[in-house]
Amino acid sequence: MINKQRVLSEFFELAGVTCHTKDEREIGDLLTKRLEELGCTVKEDTAGQKIGGNCGNLIADYPGSIAGPTVMLAAHMDCVEPCAGIKPILKDGVIRSDGSTILGADDKAGVVAILETLRVIKEKNIPHGPIQVVFAVAEEGGVNGSKNMDKELLKADFGYALDSSGSPGKIVNAAPGQNKVNVKVYGKTAHAGLAPEKGINAIVAAGRIMANLPPGRVDDETTCNVGIIKGGTATNVVPDMVEIACETRSRNSAKMEKLTKEFCKVFEDGAAAQEGVRVEITVQKAYDPYVLPDDMPAIVLAAASAQKLGLPVSIGGTGGGSDANFYNTYGVPCAVLGVGMSNAHTKEEYITEKDLYDAAAWTLQIIMETPPGNKKQVI
Image 1: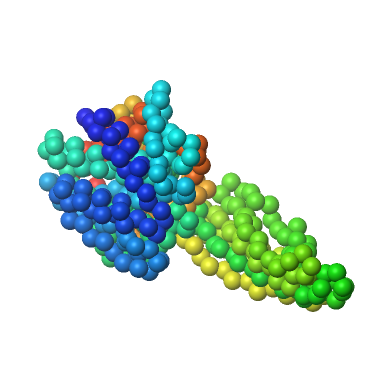
Image 2: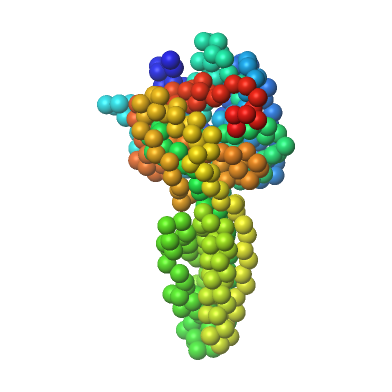
């Protein structure tokens, strides 16, 4: 029922629109125009101002032709670098960039699937309940757009974020929360050539401490990582401070908090064991985890819609966060759907034609399969 040539053409067009994180104005204006042409009422929130960007999140309401629950369809507008001057190339059923940039299927594939769904509904006069479209900014690098979203604008009863690797039919119903653990390890400066014994090397001290940190994989739903280390000014100066950026994650909130405390204790105990060494630790919650039951109506609906199209269904958790973490926190149960992006965040990113079309067809089928009637009876 979808128009494959239109889907392909729009994907190529949108992939070519530069959309740096916090610089989504061009793509935001384009999508606002298209949503309004389709009959949506579009509002832009103030998230852009809050994070130092030039565009806010787009929240668009598409009125239903019948009574029923409001379904949210979500994707994000920004891409990782390098995303300027993307030139998509189709060969043998696979779409890639020319190798000098990413492709941007993360998340233009999700955006195109949503737009095509609205077009087909309108063209075919398909009965449907209310739909709320959310196009977020600044998803990459910390889901800061959804984090700063005006949640009062969200009216959906449940929803789907079209923003996962894996072919259509993949349903992510659980994702971890994340704590950011930032540590400063202090030593004492000295001239490295004249009097190194008078100094306390903060980098060396930090290394001794980090050797005692838990491994990256704690269990099947819990991980941790040391991601960034910054310190020192010159090779002839004993560094007196080093900054370490870490994270802890788990799909279980209690496990995440326990691991975070263990992380902090390793640094505190490690500093105390070294004369003249001290640490400063700050912990910031990035987002909360979520777990949606397999038998939840929104999950059952997505699975049944995929099966009707002959798509293989898989339901399970992931190790990464997304805008869906905040949508769930805001009270909108939201699963993440696979749209076929592969090797995302690299210049080797690609998507197959089949997955691109299947993502649009699946999104449309979900809307068509959403039960009509009193929303309290179908959620």
